[in-house]
Length: 289
Image 1 (tube, rainbow, N blue to C red):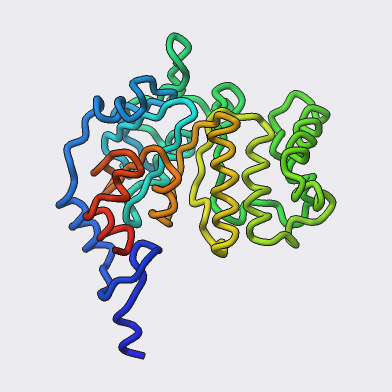
Image 2 (cartoon, helix red, strand yellow):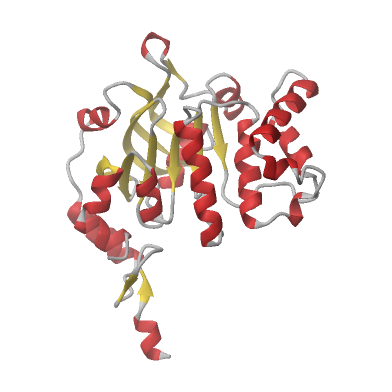
């Protein structure tokens, strides 16, 4: 038993011989941090960012979690944020969507002359006016409602219930697996089906930007592949821009065009997802190898 405890998984994938505490990961990640300026981030976004975050300081109450974060992602690109627990990854998504306090900096969305400052908009306005949807972590469905009713709830900002129901029908056409369970209560769905419902509910408003928080959390491996296949289709077929936080760092970087490593509310490393997968320091700290 003692011998088994010497072996542990790394950052949710692969095996290592020694357990590394979160504090140790943070310290080692700081040691490998690189100077990342805005020009580097813009280049990764083809110098045409559809979502642009500039020097953002944000947090909860009076507690600042993000200390001058910059971010850039082009239309139809995907970006994955990785890093140790407490790095501020989900806080970035919260700030973009309006779930926390922004002390300074700004968030811009749009292309060319249509780019607009959405920093101070409410979450409802960001969904309705800026086309940003937030897909929460697991267990955000309404278990007592049917699959169909859950989708209708995704259209709560539509001008009429009829429009929400029409949008739900388009989702059912897209995902027959959900259509076959439309009258079933959400609580009887498998983990993968619940995740599909959570994603689909966000699609009812036809957003352009998806903020996806831990898409693989709580899922069996066979469902993880299904969820990432869905996200891949949304990006490459439907043209959605995706910004995600993913605890399975290897899976997230394999999926994403761009990867950011965050440490203590700051950006430590940025590069193409494929480049971060090949980075030995990132591999040692976050990929279990």
